[in-house]
Image (spheres, rainbow, N blue to C red):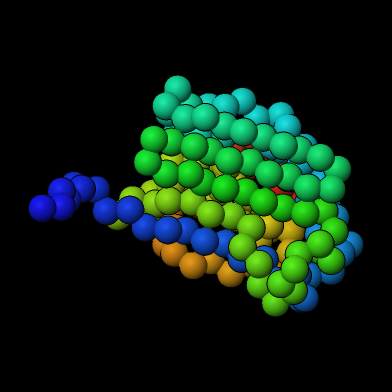
Length: 150
């Protein structure tokens, strides 16, 4: 007999479309993301940091962040050069888990979605549901850190 979980989890997948993104626009986004992630404390990356392991690799040419929990892992994988993405039509760059209400426990993932969309709108595709309050909170976090251009 299989035990059923009281919580339903959904995947949140974010795809970049390198073929419709200019390298110049991506350079701006990538450098902002790199600085943003470098300067974040663990509690700014994830809810309940004491229950997670956060691995960050931040280099000039790529960013790799893994947020590991006992039952899920969220991942960020970004390259500075768009040509480094094997699939130029769409490539997975952000992967997170959301609960049945669309709430993601990794605010950094939402921040990156909002940041990319604010600088180069229409270059990412989102598969999954984003809770509207997460979007608003992310806008506020990014504004407080002077990460948005408007």
